[in-house]
Image (cartoon, rainbow, N blue to C red; front, side, top):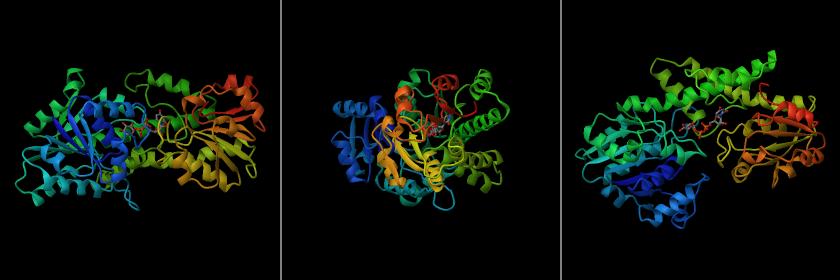
Length: 433
Ligand code: UDX
């Protein structure tokens, strides 16, 4: 099959490279000439483990191409995917669909013969209908089927998630489009991955419902962590104790500093807007957003407490800035709330992140960025782990202890054991234990 992928962000680039790896001929298109130039010369604009090798091998095999001009790729395509961004609209929280609609207009002007147009971007319910209306207006005679095919991949595990998904959701009632989609996902089909065919609106909602549920699950265990601290229980054991119940499941029950990233924050807000507009408000999702926002601020108070309530003039060492490990993505990262809150209280910040520093420099003021965890520990009054990068799991703690002004550790990801840390002479605080 021939695929045109509009947008070379996270979803577009990973999906494009994976479809090429499935054996299809894929052209990834982006208006950003610098990005296309970078990709053509073997560079990858995002940090995603394994993506460089996957792109290189498929380019070499002659299945993966990059272009700023969509004309030829769209004319020849069996399927055109829209994988552009849908950020939160400034001010009101609705998903900003201007890039999606602009892509639809462009595609409408170019398609030739029966073409399946697929939204991979996360779009609110009814967006497929809008795209269909654009086609009717711009090219009334075009033979297109507009399909929803949400992407569930996680940053840092994106290739694995694409190639071994729990399920593939395809929203369309068009039999020819179903055939094309089945063919595109044939390798997964052979793997017995469940492929769920639904109506387009249902498919659009599934993506939001899934992300909001996961955000809610994390927020729930975070609340339980607070309760554990108040009553002297251990949240990790609570998570295990409830997670072994198959109806609950053991995933996404790690208590921490609150969820961030490119999806959960924006998708929960967009779902709340859609639900209110539809006259079926989701109070649970509204509460989730509020509790999660408040949590990030509460984490700064935890650090202040570890400094005996006197942060002024103290040096806080921060390990991990990105919203989670194995990404350079800083969007809605808890560090962006925690660090300014500590600075407001007069603390000095020195920080290290394995991949996030370039982006963090743009977003944080007056932070002394260091080269490694030990440089952060040096002279710190407290060390705070915000992101659970693997390299923070096996720190030379004796060295850290010697470098710090005082051995005080706040572990917001529960990667160390309280008893071990006490035995090593650290004043140690974690989450829900
Ligand atoms: C998420 C969804 O998982 C994915 O299916 C969707 O397509 C996009 O959004 P992503 O944002 O990449 O993926 O990261 P994810 O691993 O889901 O983590 C999101 C946030 O939740 C992170 O800040 C992470 O630290 C936090 N989290 C996750 C927890 O605090 N505890 C957990 O148990 C799991």
